[in-house]
Image 1 (cartoon, helix red, strand yellow):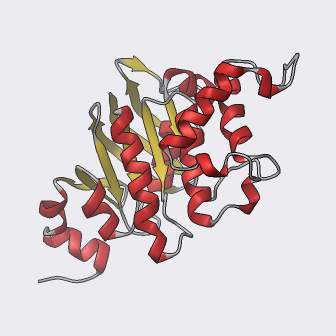
Image 2 (cartoon, helix red, strand yellow):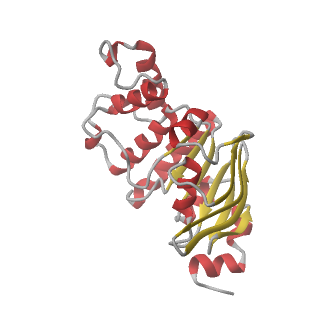
Length: 247
């Protein structure tokens, strides 16, 4: 599905990523961990096209997308959420998802009749909201949602872009501890129903252990470890890097 080869990125004299290599398979849910400043969000921005690498290659389903802009990657099936939710808070929950569908179909801003009259798009948007347990909030303004439901809506909007590869940048950040598992249960259930390959940036070890197939640890610009979560989290170097402890 996604293949990253020899990827490097620097900002001035500071090398953030250096010759990074990894792959994510179809239907796989992978976590990317690392201490602050390790380059996790930079990696997401490179894959989504919001940054360009200094060198290396990014392939999606055999197609070289290294130089492709974000809108092209969206058309090819890459979608992302953000650490800070990117919602249209003055619109309803339904219209947030419906606008994403219009956008990916190239009809955003070119309505010749009310958006509600597009029955197919409305039905598709409601189906997505049902998948994400948000159907009961369809007519409410997005600004009135809880932080957890805003996070879920943010991911639902990414799904509305017809994603087959999803980037989730800290999907539980800012969510109350008691709500984190509700948010992830909803998101992961939807991912599994769709069979969407997913890369999750996350710092909560309980979330990582519960919801991901595989864990990669990014440290000092390279992949320190890559494997099953139990094996990776038992690694001495990983413990020292993530928790500052050693056996």
